Image 1: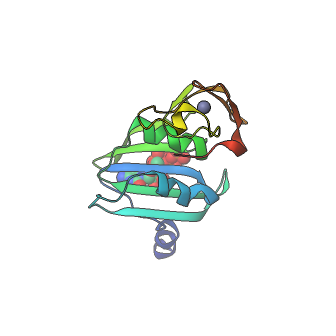
Image 2 (image 1 turned 60 degrees about the vertical axis):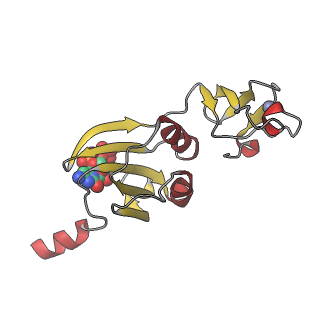
Length: 156
Ligand code: CTP
Ligand code: ZN
């Protein structure tokens, strides 16, 4: 009985210190891995997708030992996984639970779709967008004032 219960719970093991990104839509899980800079990390990184979730049907989860996310990384996650939860783990406990949210201005992170925009032509001008609507996502470029919908938006 006990053995069966343990088997059922052992999908991805707990981490001691680091970050757990939970409630990722299954099909966005690998995209989230891509946007995080995980190359130099020496601790355990676990990525699981198509896990059964009571609330989401299927979900993905990413556990990164020894890493704290930057605000920029959390904002990027919000753009592709708007319902994700970022858990900060300290000594096996969930110390902080952050519900990601799309910020009201987006600095860097995404590109302007206007080829003539200064941000696509000057190396040292970082992109900046005002969020006009969060769901569905609609943003306006600070520089050329082009409006972009979700389908025009691509990550930098
Ligand atoms: N977790 C982990 N290592 C730890 C502590 C927690 O990997 N040392 C993971 C859990 O497996 C879970 C997530 O971090 O996926 C959040 O943990 P917790 O808040 O305890 O779980 P829930 O209550 O299910 O979270 P939520 O309410 O956000 O669904
Ligand atoms: Zn622009």
